[in-house]
Length: 583
Image 1 (cartoon, rainbow, N blue to C red):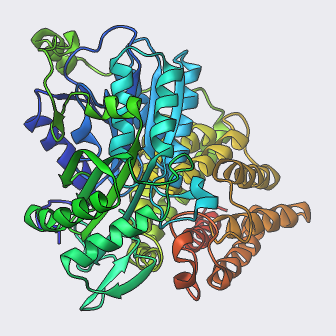
Image 2: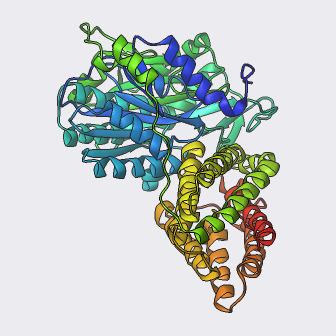
């Protein structure tokens, strides 16, 4: 388990701080993550990678010449926010555009997509690519739904090496697509991981058994088998991957492959070498030529005891890029000439940055009526933070049934940050709309992950509807909730029946709109809608998930409500209490 920490909520930030202090030769810190400490040639495409903390050396450890130009780093097992990604990409951009790369998880897809939109609005040519190499998470016919695990490394490296050669953005993207299409991974685990501050692992494996087809966020495997010997584990990994070849690799014989045997945290290097000796023999028997293999910890999951095998089927071009030199804190290959330091990291530049006085925050003008409404908004956000805090452990347990167990802590981070920033804006005289929109950015920024992006969208939709000019009436609030419901469905792609928060948000919005149309006061209408939300959340226990991390473990979630749906129902009831107090 993770034993050395201070405040668990500060673990990711403190880990990144220590990482940058230990690796100043390679990286420099920026808001949201790290970028190269050396200068990037003008006009070169910047490859910016990212994901949650807890996976070192992914993602910050892969920043350096020959690999990533920057990495956005989120909270533990949670994607970085769009604001963090935008910050890192802006710092890494050298004039040639940006390729954002990440594992194929809903939160990362949402936040990196939003960041790409912001970068494009800034005039920065931007493309995105999600690595989807885990064959256990979806079948070949649904390969776009697969998770990204240790296959991140060869795909990131191919794109980055192409960028180092000076190729334009579209060609770098095509290289990433080619590498991604030819990369497959499969993993097994013998025990789950334990998050900082937790007293139990996210999942357990019965004695003398192993989990098969695990994820890297503490998700349980899709099945169990008897505990194997090292040679039996090697055979399972190799035979499983050789059963599914890329379309243009009909027969492995005579083919070349980059091979990665990855340790997930607690399996030590000597154990990996014992397994790898058999992996190499089995691949050789199949006629596969192994090119520059890697056996070590490359994408971890805290202290999970497990391993994964990745094969990237090479052609001449991909082999050239795989063999290309790289020099990062955690991954080095070949030799590179000395690099020029980044002029932004001269002693004078650093001193100027450290002594710069931030501008005082300014809020837009607001009417007295809107500022009075902001009192109620702040009280509601306080109620949200308190109810989330009271139920954080429960939400984590629900989420861990078929997911990664981080919903409680993510909601805690987001709601606490939203209330704190809202209180600051309220103290400066902000109206209801500004209080909500600033809370929205803070929630998305601190929570990260899918829930961070969706709750940021909900609060921003409400803030836009309320504005800063008038006192919002019940109908306007209902309109804002309706727009929030539509925006969440547009952004996340989920619909009613998918076992997500949408199963509560849609009926809640519909009930609120119907009640206000009848002429009920906001408090009474909200009360009726919150009752609907509670019933809808309970009903998700009978659903099978069709989206998100829980989808590969659908059967396990039967009988348990969706964590996002349950937290939304709790929040709607807590807000009703705030409305009664400020009626």
